[in-house]
Every structure is written in structure tokens, then in C-alpha cells.
Length: 617
Image 1 (cartoon, one colour):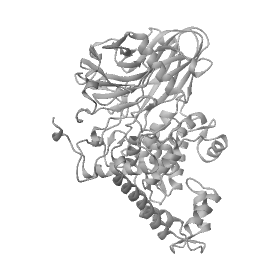
Image 2 (cartoon, one colour):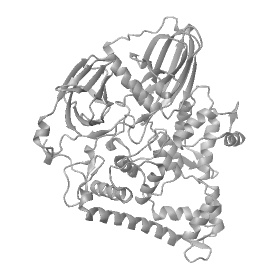
Image 3 (cartoon, one colour):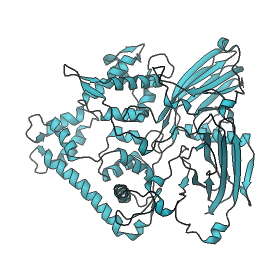
Image 4 (cartoon, one colour):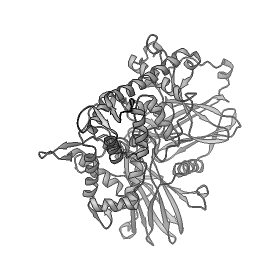
């Protein structure tokens, strides 16, 4: 296909990305600068004309977030609408008790210190001092809203003028986007060609490589010194395989522990989950499995995430997190279960859940529906209530966060949910207040109490469902209340000789430990192959029963860029989401390249990958 035949971005898309660039550079010196804190995220969103609440910020900046880049920022702006004058007016009118167009200091203080994200009296005083222009003790909120919106618009217009006037800024790359004039001359680079974010740990650095980009600007001598390596592996369909790790015949007589969890697809494309700690009091035989967890309440409707691949990596617990070493991982598969069986010595281990990202990934815009399900409604008596669709979704969420499956939420389980959706924990005093207001049993929240808690939040906001949507989207739901960006799972541990203890954890070092374990598993199971003529650039290609994974090791003192081409593969899905891409590997570093699974398990598949060095820097 020629460049002229490539899909071109619409004028609307061009304008959107130009505005994103202008906004970003109004806050940061370079588009290559990452957003490194929640405060910076708030600032750049405000520059873009958004007015993010704390709940909104927590949705995008989770406890596991260390940075966001320009592409992440663009994705956020697609989901967060600009603050409109009518929206602000509606909020202020709720505070205007006598409906005269003005708000007194006491009315503003009452609203902002008792509802929603409560402010301090000092913060309210500071706002009123700025807003009370004529110092009469009253706020003309119509004028205030007009000034607020117009100021935001002027800031954006000034940023856009700066971008268009500064020739140096025009040639900068913006994440995966490059500058193009906003309307008159349309670039051949489509926003649809931006590389998908990858389900790799945050330290991974990769560069999108577009097949239809113009010829390289590097000197021909640099291009001619490429060194490459080709790998071709043919895999049989899983339907033709039997598990290499059969279930023990007397498994029903073994001790059994289980724990639930969930993989979450983050805004930046990475995948997160809880970790677990397994205590083995004495040496025993163990049968360990992990599998997707079905939440379907109807036998004729299956959960769409049941085909997502899962795995568990088991590491020993050392004196420090860095001391942990890989012990085992689940290699075999029995239907939907991923299995390990063997003898475990007495001790304490980390269990690190993993999914490749081949089947749990961001959906394309075309597959997204514009419809939005209603979450709350008014009953015949005028009271607010949760819709049937929301109650069903909350029932499923309750089942996922009820990690031990006892039908109740402990404070620890509820706090895993709170950290996920709001970034904050519920302390014991707040839990005591919950006990007074919501249905509890044994100091644990029941399913009914969980419904009551969510209904109270909706009632406090007079039916405004914004915060409910923040919670639902953080848990992986779309606006049709479909679970599309999460995969619930269950871990089962059977032990022959003694009862084992299995507990959930949330470790900041979890992603790093998982990445280390993943790399060690690949290096332990396969030999390295050097790129032709480059003995210090090594490719490890792991061939498991159901997954192929590749790792790049750069032993040189320079950063290298490796071009990866999967175009000749058949019936393959890469965790990268695209068939041609490039990976930057820093000096003296090992980095995951990709994971590959079959698109259809019922057919044979061929992995055909060519890795080529593009540059040394």
C-alpha cells in the first residue's frame, strides 16, 4: 500500500492532537518530559480546560503509577470532557438557597466543607477571596463561571499561538505523534498508527516503528550495518495437546486453600494485580493452579475474559525484596487452568500473578459504544435507587474483591478496593462509622451493606453518577457496564501433607519482582542467540507449551534500538499489539521484547520473528 493510500486523520483529530501538544508544552519544556506526580497531572489537565476532581486524578494516578507520558495524557483528554459553563452553573445553583444569582460565604462554606471532596475552611476562604471581586461578601457565580471558562480558553489559545509561532517546537516528537499543521496540510502519519502501549513494567522503554513511515533519515552507512537474527517456531493447537501435569488422583483428600484476585489494564497499557504470600510450614507436595474466574450468573452467557492467559511465578522471600529468587512457575495448562505440581520445602514464598497482555488489551475506538447505561433512578416515591444493571455490576465487583470467598468484606479486602478506586485507605474509625450505617456481620461488610454504601454515595451527590463511574472504570468496566479492561482470577493451592497459609499483598515492588522472575524463567529455560556479528546483543526466545516470550540482553556500554518484525507469523497475537515495532534497550540491561499467543487455540500457529539492530547511541 502506498503512502497516498494510507488512512488519513480527520481535521478533528489533527486539531485535537495539536491542542494536546500546545497544552503539554505550556507546562513542560519538552514533550519527552514525563508527568511525574499527581500534582503535575492536575496542573496539565487544568491547562487543558479540565477541572479534575480527586477521584478523577486517582483514577489515572494509582498507587502503582510512577510516570505518565504525552501519549497517556492524550488518552486521558479523550475520556475527560472540558469543564463547561453550564456544568459549573448547575453546581453553583445547588448552593444558591434563595435563587437570586448570588452565593454568600456561609452558603459556599456549607457546600464545600460538607459535601463530596470536603475542603477546609481556609481553602474556602481563599476561593472566596479570589471570587468576590467587588468585596461585598457575595459571589456573582454567573460572572465567576464566565471568567473561569474564558480564562481557561485564553490559556489554551495562548499555548496554541506559542506552538505555531515557535519553529523549534514544531519539529519535536510528541510521544508517538509528530507535529503536523493543524488543518491545511494533512500529514501522512495517522493517529491510528500510534503504537499501542505495552503491558510491560514501567521501566520498559520502547519506540513505535511505523511500517508506512517515510524512508529513514539516518545515513545509508548506518542502515547498512544492521545485524539481524531470525526465529521461526511452529506450534500445534492446544486442542491437540494433553496436559503434561495431570491432577493428582487423590486431590480431593489434600488440604486446600484459595484466593481470588484480578488483573487490571491500566491507562498506560500496563497490567497490575495484587501479589500473594504463601507460607509452607513443612516440606510437602503441592498442586498449584491459577485460572480466570467466571462471574456469569447465567449458564448461557460466558465471561468474555475466560480465554485470557494466566500464570503464577513463585519466588522465595529473602531478607529484602531484592533477595527473592525464582523457585517455580506454572508452565502446563489443563483447559483454563495453568498448573505447577511438585515438592515445596518449608518456608515463605511470593506468588506473582502474570498475564501476557496478548488477550487483555486496550480496545480500539471502533469497538467502543457511545451508549451509556443509567446508574441511578428515582422511584415512585421520589427517592434515589441503584438501577438493576448497576446492582449486577456491583455484585460482580463484590465477588471479585471478596478475596477469600466468605461472602463478606473485611477491612483489608475493602481497602484493596479503596486503593484501587480512590487511592486512599479506610481507617478503623471510618470502618466503625460504616458499621453504624451499613449492614455488617462479624465486623465485615455484607453484600447488602456494599450496595447501601454505594447508594449513599449516589444520594449524597443528588444522583450525579460521576464518582460511581470513576469507581466502575477503575474496576475495568466501560459505559455499557461490560467488564472489558480486567480479568478476575482464582488461585488454588492443594497440599498433600499440611495446610498452607495464603494471604494477599500489595507491594510497590511487585511489578519489579514479577519482571525479574519473568526474565529469569526465560533465561533458565532457553539458550541465548547473538545477533549476527554482535556477540554482546543476545536474544532469548522461550517456547512454552502455550506461550512464546522473547527477551533482549544488551551487554554493551551503549543503548541499542532493536527493530522487531513479526509480519511473517501466522495465527499469532503479540503483547505489543502491532506486528512491527522497535525497542530501546539501555546499556547493560535486559528487557522483555514481547509475548506471543495464538489468536485461535484451535489452529496451529507459526511464530516468525526477525530482530535487527537499528542504532547504537
